[in-house]
Image 1 (tube, rainbow, N blue to C red):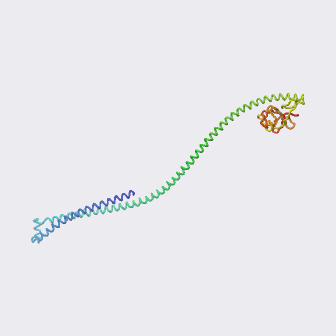
Image 2: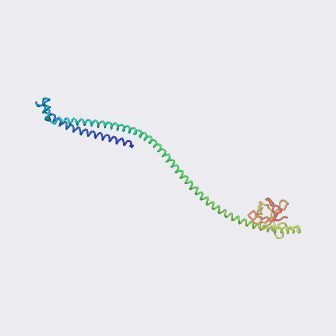
Image 3: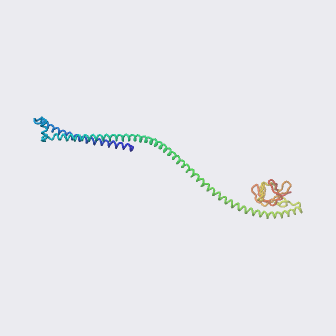
Amino acid sequence: MSFLGKVLVILNLLLAVIYAGISAVLYTQRVDYKAQISALEQQRQKFIDFMNKQEYKSTASVGSIEQRNEIPDYITVVRNVGSELKNLLEKHEIEVNKLKDQGKFLESKISDLENKLKDEESKRQISDQKLGESELERKKLLTDYQNLNARMDELREARDAAEKELKDFRGKHDTLYTQHLQLTTKAARLDEEVKEAELASKQAQTRIERLETELKFIHERFPETITGGGTRPEGGEGPIIRGRVLAVKPDLKLVIIDKGGPDKVQPGMRFIVYRADQFVGHIEVEKVIGEYSSAKITNAKISIQQGDQIANRLQ
């Protein structure tokens, strides 16, 4: 029940209490009036009996009796009661008018309150409608909140997976970085070895040039001598090994040839490099790798190229 409804109930209760009080007062006065009227009726009867006597038949006799104060108190009592009754009636009429005015006022108040109650009821209906809309909005927001929680859970899972991948990536990165450091160290060591090899190559080149000079001198003096520096069997005869250059590394002064262990090639063997009838240079085997061998360029009249022919000696 709204506040305005409670006020209307209280006003109705107050109005009922006021009407009950007035009714009780009027009922009490009515009982008193009956008692007084009964007493007056008895006095009136005595007065009638008294007046029926012979001496009270005429008006003159009545006047003389009244002057002698021989009339009973009935007349005075009747007069007093009549005056009081008149006053009471006037007061009762005044009270009734007041009650009527109060009733009209209360009816006006009740009408105003009923109008206000209707307004409040209309407002309540509007409020109920807004409350329903708010409830729908609340349910929608609750659904959105649940969806957001589910999305947050998915994002947390994705974040955990990403963190795991990042951790794995960092582990791989650390491994790669370690390998990078190892390779860098190895590259630095290889650079030093290359520098040492280049120095040894220069020294060997100087030696080869000196040997080439001596070899040229021997060729000029002894044309029948074998050219080339390959191994020779005793007695001046041995297998001739012929092949070709498969790859060239000019910066490292290395070549790869297509002859190896099956061809009885050994580290230290020297080969002549030629292109058709043109002399190109000399190479010396450093390492035998299966069917192939790597050799360093000891002397190059011109640049050695892939496809150049090689031989351990010429006939």
